[in-house]
Length: 196
View: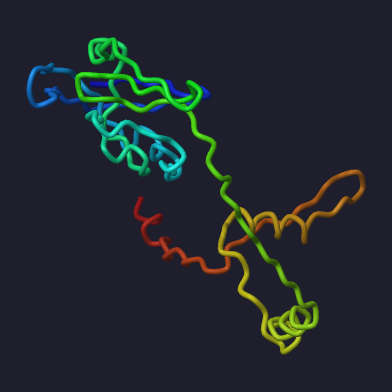
C-alpha cells in the first residue's frame, strides 16, 4: 500500500500500512472495514478536561464513551462510508442547544461546545546584569590565554580561510588555497614510474 492523506492546512502524510478489522457494539451492529495505519490521528480529545457540573446530563442513557469528558487519544477515525450508518435518529439537546447528545449504535455521542475556563499560563523572567557580566568574564577563555577550538565544519573552515586570505590586487581577486593541515604524504613512486 502506498497512499497519501491530505489533512488540515494541506498537511500531507504518506501511508504504507493498512489493516482490515471488524467494528462492533457487542450485540446488533458489526461491520468489517479497512483502516489506514498512521502514527497519530490527532491530539487528545477533548483538548482539556470538561467540567460536567455545568451541564445536567441525563443519567438513564448509555454513552458511547462514559469518560468523554477526559482527554484521551483517538484510536480509530471512521469515515463517511460508515458514519451515517452509525447514527440513529434520536437527539437530546441541552444547554441552550449548544450540546447535542446524538444516539448511535454505540450509545449516545456528546457533541457541541462548552465554555471552559481559559487555561492560565504564568511566566516570570528575572535578569540580574551583574551576575551575567561576571559569568561572561569567567567564561571568556581568551582572557586567560585559552582559545576555543575552531569549528570542525569544513564549510565554516573554508569560509574563514576565504575571509582571511582574499585580496583585491591590480583589478583581480586573489584567494589562497585552503591547504589541509593533516594530510598524509604520498609514497615515493619513482621506481614504479621507471619500470613502466
